[in-house]
Image (cartoon, rainbow, N blue to C red; front, side, top):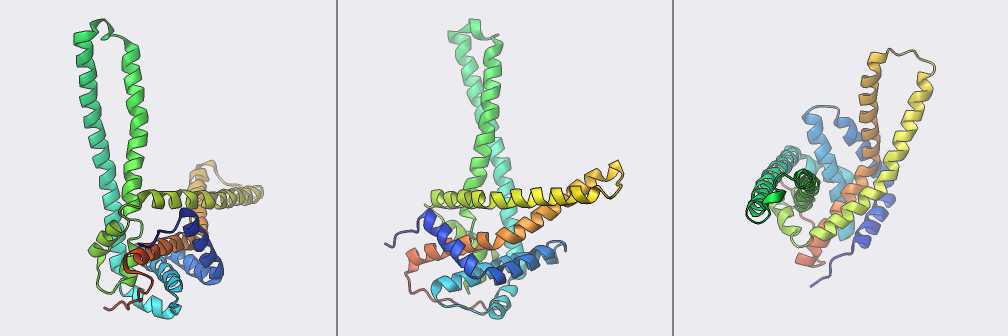
Length: 282
């Protein structure tokens, strides 16, 4: 069996591929993030461009590089399926949050009943002890802030590469691409989460730099302008949107390259190094 790539190898290969195609990937990323400003159709275009970057990266890994125009023609045919798959993933993550909260509260109530039942029979003098109530309340509050993110992180890892099968494989659709991601990531959650954690840490300085730079720039401009106090919230929201768009445009290709490298690794282990790049048909 082919050994999986280490977390460090995935990150290094992704950085190298992004750096070697920086101009092309950055251009595509900027266009994608501008499309985000257009509801629905723009979101579909954004999903397609993300998939285009990943497919271009994947073709490089296979040693079968494709032209941007050809990849665009292949992926754009499934633009709406890519958006639909993304929406389904969002709904699945929302359902995960709701279900995990319900399960947590059910477990918390049952365990609390067990604890107080024990106290009634074996330590009745402690029933009215407020420290126990406060302690239990604090314990459950802390635990839910750990349990829910862990559940969401686990599901996110299983659905991390949903756009790759749809953008690359000929015989698939928005349902099968989710199933494919779920199957391919089985048993490698720790690897994926490790990659995601390191990628987040690598992106964090970019967010901080952009945020500080934009705040400084706006602060400098505001010295020469008189803006009513009631517009402060609008400026803050606008600043947040701009920061997210700029940072997203910079870091999205790196994120999509990571997905392509992981997908390549999963396919390499399953089907060997001779896997041929198929053509997406209508």
